[in-house]
Length: 149
Image 1 (cartoon, one colour):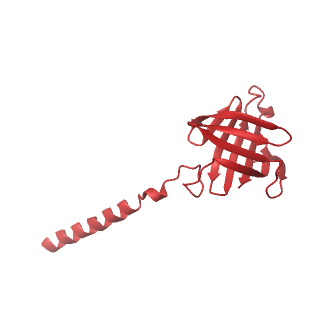
Image 2: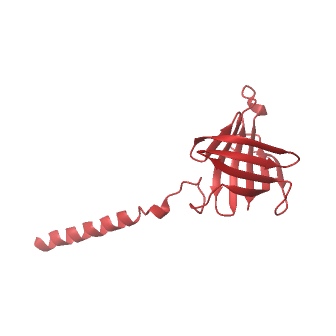
């Protein structure tokens, strides 16, 4: 009986060790589902591609565009301002506006909403929602932007 009790305690100790090691802090993922948790959205990003969808579930592609490496006409810069982000877009014209943080990796400016899907040290994917046409759902725009540093 004493041996059976000792075996039970040993088994319980092993199970507790496995449970504790599986809860490692290095497994935390607070960057939108992707990669390197030490990465920051801050910095200059080059638009690599964009996809536009007709539906919020992003299943029906309406248009797709790919740009060359480091396309200077498609530069986005993100800079933190408290919890918010200042976004500067350089394309045919330069636009700068502040994205107010809605939640983890979710930012909004007026009707435009940006959700960071994946972020690594050299790759960024952002889902875009334009709810400008709130009454007519067929006019809403849904896009996915892919960037590289």
